[in-house]
Structure formats: C-alpha cells, structure tokens
Length: 247
Ligand code: SF4
Ligand code: SF4
Image (cartoon, rainbow, N blue to C red; front, top):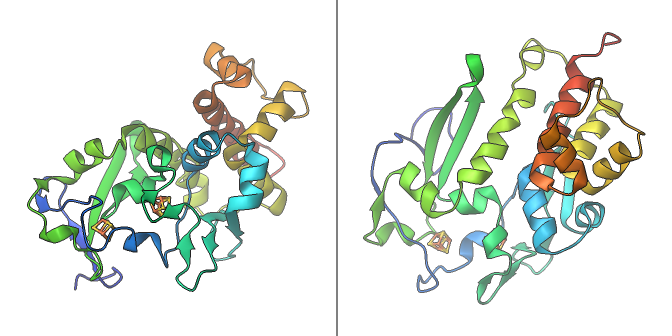
C-alpha cells in the first residue's frame, strides 16, 4: 500500500485508464451510500437545498452535522445519516439516490478522489487517488476511462469549478503561515458559504457589507443567482478573514 494513504486508497495518475462502471444492475447497488462520512462542500449544499426546494437554514438544520474539531482550521459539514442499523444516507432509496441530479461532489467522483490546491497565479494543482473498497464491484465492469473522462461523465465540471474557488480561502497564504480564524469568523464562514439564503438577506438588508461597490455579477447573486451569490460569499469572507487590520 502506498505511504500516507488510508487502506484501499491508491495514488493515481490522471492520464491512466481504469476499468469501472456503476449502474443499477451491479450487485452492490447503493452499498456505497451507507456507513460513510459524507463531507459537503458549499456548492453541494447549494445544489441539494435547491433540489429539495428548501431554505438553506432549514437544510442545515435538517440534513447537516457540523463538526468543530480544533485540529482542523474550518468547521466541517457532513450529511446526516439515518439510524437504520446501516447508517444509510438520508437520500438513499431501494431505487437509488433520490437526489441523483444534484448529488454531492464526493458521490459523483467515487471511486476517484481528487485533491486541489491553489498555486501561484491562480492555477489549481490536482492530484488523484483511486479508492478500491472490497464492497464495490464496479471494477469488474469493462468500461475504461481516465479520471478526467470519468469526471466529465459524472457532471463534475461545475462542481470542481466552485469547489476549487474555495481553495483561495482554505489554502490562503495566511492560513498556511498559521493564522487561525476566531469563533466569530468561523460563524461567518458557515454563513457565507453554507447558509446562502440568510447571507443574501443579511447583505441585501445592509447588515453585512463589502468594503467596495458590488460588481454586476455580484448584484445578480443578490438578486437570485445562487452560484454568483456563493462567489460573492467567498469574496466577503476573504475580506473578513484576511483584509481586517484588527486581526
Ligand atoms: S447523496 Fe445519493 S449518491 Fe450520495 S450517498 Fe446519498 S444516496 Fe448515495
Ligand atoms: S459500491 Fe461501487 S459499483 Fe456498487 S453502487 Fe457503489 S459505486 Fe457503484
């Protein structure tokens, strides 16, 4: 087993082909939707709350467990699992995923894992792992693809674009140098990235502000475009975390 990776995880070259296919005919159908820690990105929450047509506040209350671990810089959001003896995902059914068109990034990418890090000049450096867990029978299927081809097939381009935008905060130079946000800034992190409907209301009402005029795309975010609002949330958070002289 390669060093520094959990069991069943293998470093993987993005140009390399792998055999894999997942479909309702596999004997293990939905096995991977149980007993898992499913971390949600802000864009995952945006898609899921819109899929369910509910307010972000209610989505967080009903479907998200927020983990505060002092060893991790920012709080982690996990999807709730059901207490059915198998710790099944709250969205799994005998027919598969009930939110399939809006399923989270990690579900789309599985069995490939992708790490992204923002390098100089805004470039994103990617690395991949292949997760070969014994319960997953998709590897005996004949279809072959590279991770990039697999991601296109799983509709990950938009997810990766918005997830990668977050690396400007997660891997910010000040964070890398050891700066740690305080509790009130961590609450701002959850507000601007995960509770978009409340963030929109607070900004529209002037209770929180940018220290510069909003750009036209940001105004579209306030007017109803959630993806543009998420990018505005990231810009506001950068201002609050990294541009404040009081730190
Ligand atoms: S969201 Fe859908 S694909 Fe992901 S674990 Fe739950 S049921 Fe499975
Ligand atoms: S365990 Fe693997 S093959 Fe089976 S449903 Fe999940 S991803 Fe597909």
